[in-house]
Length: 287
Image 1 (cartoon, helix red, strand yellow):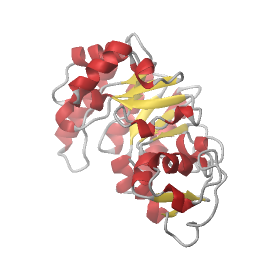
Image 2 (cartoon, helix red, strand yellow):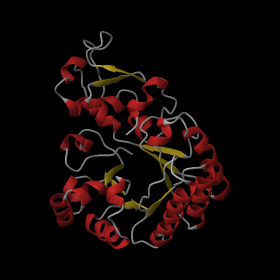
Image 3 (tube, helix red, strand yellow):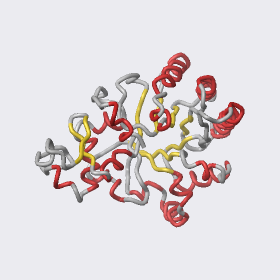
Image 4 (cartoon, helix red, strand yellow):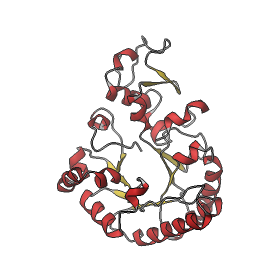
């Protein structure tokens, strides 16, 4: 699922490329009261002009999390009217004292319990700083009846810890659910493993475009690279343009990057799930 910005219409790609789901970020509504008012007066669908499904992400900066109550979350979701939302986020860090990370993990479990009877479908959040906490969090999500779980994974990718965490989480989901589903939040490229269980979401498809990064056959380079700059691209976004034509066209470049190989493979983890991505550029694909 591609993450979009509520304030940057260059990310509103659905007039050019169809997609079943997108993710909007609650953090934007919390930080921008004027935006929140506009969205509440129309609902997310009418505000964005999007006819598909919208998941409202609760992942946000720590200082915002500390300000919000359960009532605040409920009011924001009711006003925004998404098709689904997430359990409220908490912060757990690997270098925190264990007592603090356990406190936050237990808080996440209590929030998951409070949201299990919510009016709209809710995605559970897997939290924890160590394996035991992550396993306990996953088991709690399943016990509460959540059909889909999400794992914020930007930090795990940066520290090269994602593979180990996934092995434990997917193992629990396979044992305890009929159709294990885990959304890797903050990761836009497919891992080539756990293909039935995983889907992907991120904002890097747009961030990379703003940096002038160009996708070709699973690799990333700059628009000025000699191997691509004068090459015509026939993807649904470029329609015959050469790479250099995209220097001032961030939106088309943003749409090109996932389209160049396969939009679903890049965003949802389905289709060509084995698209090769060099390890050294992985940080470019996280958001």
